[in-house]
Length: 301
Image (cartoon, rainbow, N blue to C red):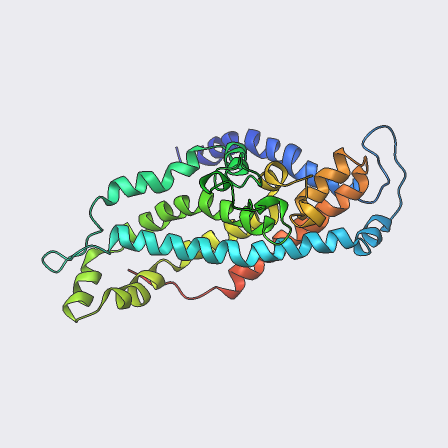
């Protein structure tokens, strides 16, 4: 039986590995190749070396998109994780203690379902819904709440607020998943630890910073990386909610939107591939740096 174990495992891995190499690794290699060409998306192409990378270096719209991605990269993980930790702590430890133990607030199981509900909606549906919520005229749900004498808020049509509106929707859509994720992590922490700390007179704040946060550290790392990847993307909401596919004065322009526009609107697939290469390495660098900077010794429960 032991002799035949490895052929059995390899037999199961051959097909998925082959599919991964063809459709993932192969696609990346093709993108790297096309980034060195002037391909329009149709017909043949010529190799132009690093001309596409020189062009994007001098493209002001690309730098605007990078600034917006950086804005999302800082605020999306920070706000989402802070809110998710707060709500997860309330749902698991925030209730009144009983007999020295810990419990969540009343109705915590129902609240978990409510928080997770946005995950059941496709991102395209979320974009359409909030596009109506933030409508800049009287048909917008928020503007419709005010009397006719009030000047409607522009929201997505205002370059000062358009990206902030998209950030708010990204947070709303993501926070429920991380509430459930952190709740699962908190549920795996032995209750005896909380009981011992409570007997020593620890407050809820002390429990959070001294027990919950250290024991959830690896989960927080994963959450930060995933949210960072989402911040580098944000294509669906920007494409659906933005005015003119990038907002007024490119106020919601992000790299993924630039890739889409150059590939399918401007017929510059080679240049779009170069942008894709930049986005790939930015995302990879962010993930590696995050895991390296936040690395710490494991805390055993």
